[in-house]
Image 1 (cartoon, rainbow, N blue to C red):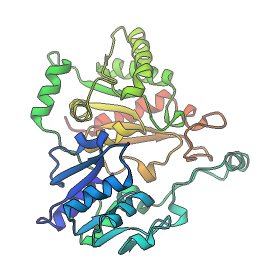
Image 2 (cartoon, rainbow, N blue to C red; image 1 turned 180 degrees about the vertical axis):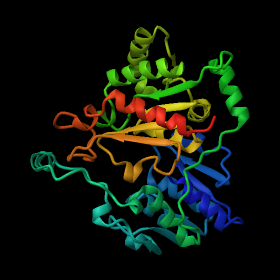
Image 3 (tube, helix red, strand yellow; image 1 turned 180 degrees about the horizontal axis):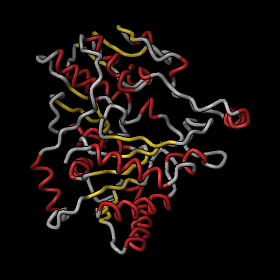
Length: 349
């Protein structure tokens, strides 16, 4: 979701040298991207002093902190970067030289208490909606606007080359000799169970879509998704008579980006691969439960469809549902199949 801001910054400052500080596990994501010249990575074991020392050695003139954490602002301050831009929140004002207003209270992503959830269900005040400007894409754009970048939103973008896709096709056998489309399925969600649509609904949807489109399925996800992916893969094989290609835990982040670009369609929970699929331009249906598509959904992609339940306790932003998971159990497979077919009919090719 930060890529639109980085793209706008590159457009506004074509001569600037842009270095991205990124967690080590995300390093591959930024390979060959036109909006960044260099990537500095840090590991989970590195402390604030080690990171800020490496930043100081680079002698940066300007630093923008995208996260709203104390640590990210303190690292810029300890690195001695003269111009430090960020949201003045969480006690960070003294660490920044340019302060960008944060979201209003009505636009914040706030975890609901159990008592509030039960109260909202009892009195049924209706689902919470957020204004368009509340989306995280706009938040990042406001930060780079302090350096002259446009705040006009654009779709998130991660470039993947044809050469990368050819390598992935050969490695995982992603041929199209019979002309059948490849559909990807991302059933996991590292955040927690409150973002995972029930496995049996994924299986029902996969069977229905295969009947209607003659697609072949592949299961995607990271290491923590392997057990769930194995179970769903076996269930789809029994339901359709054809085992999916199960790639969960078998791809690097860069390979995952290439696989998602190869896919003709992706069915996904609100999870990391959802954002990556949107950024490489793949048609998708994204299922939302405890979180809000108005804040973090793929709403800037014309090829994306969002499916969610109309329940008053959503979004609660909790990792696990304290009641009956009605936000996800209220979504039937027929709804998702209809959204998928609409998405496919609207997408060229």
